[in-house]
Amino acid sequence: MSEPIGGREPYDLVITGGRVVNAAGSRSGTVLVRDGRITEILDPGAPVPPHQRAIDASDQLVIPGGVDPHCHVGQVLGEFSMLDNHAEASIAALWGGTTTIIDFAIPEPGQSPLQAVHEKRKSAQDTRTDLALHGGVVAWDGTTHDQLLALADLGVLTVKMFTTYRDGVMAGFDTIEKVMRVMADVGGVAIIHAEENHLVEQAQSREAASGRGDSRHHGLTRPESAEAAAVSRTLELAAKTGSAVYFVHQTTPEVVDLVRAANAKGVRAFSETCPHYITLNESVYESATPELFVCCPPLRSKVAMTGLRDRALQGHIHTLGSDHCCYSREQKAKYRQDVRSMPNGLPGVEHRLSVSFDTLVVRGGMSLENFVAMFSTNPAILNGLRTKGWLGAGADADIVVLDPKKRLTVNAGNHHMKTDYSPYEGIEFTGAATTVISGGRVVIDERGFHDPGPVGRHLFAKAQLDGVPLLAAPHVGGTQTVLNAIDRLEQMA
Ligand code: URP
Ligand code: ZN
Ligand code: ZN
Image (cartoon, rainbow, N blue to C red; front, side, top):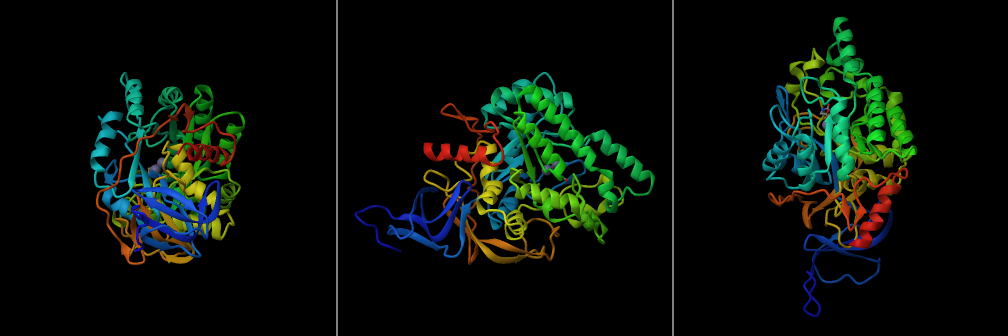
């Protein structure tokens, strides 16, 4: 440990020798950390001040901790409960370089949106990462308007609605429109799972009648046209109401293009995709265990997967969400013969970084800056989390040292998610975290995981700061919006 000079307390941590990558640009430098915050980034060659601990990031990248905008933790959906709790999900997230999780508080039958948020916050007391929540609305009633205002006061400005899963969490388009009107007023965002339910049900009945209602034929039961129809209809509502809208898990180039076309007309609309939609395709449904890959929307054709990945490489997709859902092999297998009853979704919070870095940067040639934008910066900005998603004085010390050459072979036997399988089993990815710092604490290093205990903070979205719109600022194309927002944050820090 270096000696303090002139009585100044040493820094808690310094990270030397790495390339510091922000969405807005990268440079070499030394990152200084004190009291859970970054205080400064020094130019290379500047004397390194006294410090408690130094991390050598030579030949590695130093990027902002991941912000996963789409994570289901311990959610109960119908007959099935996801197997992890917040301690488990957040530890798996840290292993994979994600230091902030955004989970969902979807009302269960009989529960109000506010109750769902209160319950979720209670159940998330032991989170190791910081945590924010999306609220949810299933059905509009006489209390919903005021509840949404109360949620906004509680820092929940993003509200999820599903256009499918009838008899479950589906919200009608009339409800979506009403929620959007409130979001337009409070500066929030409607978060949409877009699949036209009647088209899904039609396809499900047709395929079941022909003996193809099982998981091998999952793709046929939820066609691309159902996704496109719901995206188009929702974009019309966003245009009509002035609300910002964020589409989770987009799976085809067509729906990304619909969002872009709406942007060109002034609609504030945003696209998320997931690592599995740009890396895996429908051929996995031919495997001996197709049920392990059942998610909604389904994995698409190779052509769609490649087109989607190209849209990401062109900068047309804003964020990468894991859509993490922790079910076991046994849960997935129970109704493998009938996709209408299956638990949908794939585990993924731990591998969002490696899978997407390999696919987009290593193989696709994406710039490091654009990758950081999708992995961390844009999810932070779009969710009103001003101290997340960037490295600079005033930002939270959520930092990943990423070795762009480190190889990681996925193996459910030693991953940290609470499930006994991975959709990427046996696949080798290039690019992995070597050190992870969360709130200034080193939680992953060459010696393994150092449990910080239940220190994760509950985050509150802010729509405005000093009169400047922070959340879902008017879209001006590609990642430029968030880069402008980051500039403002750095100036205000
Ligand atoms: O298949 C999925 N994605 N399941 C989780 C719930 C959802 O639709 O996001
Ligand atoms: Zn969904
Ligand atoms: Zn989801």
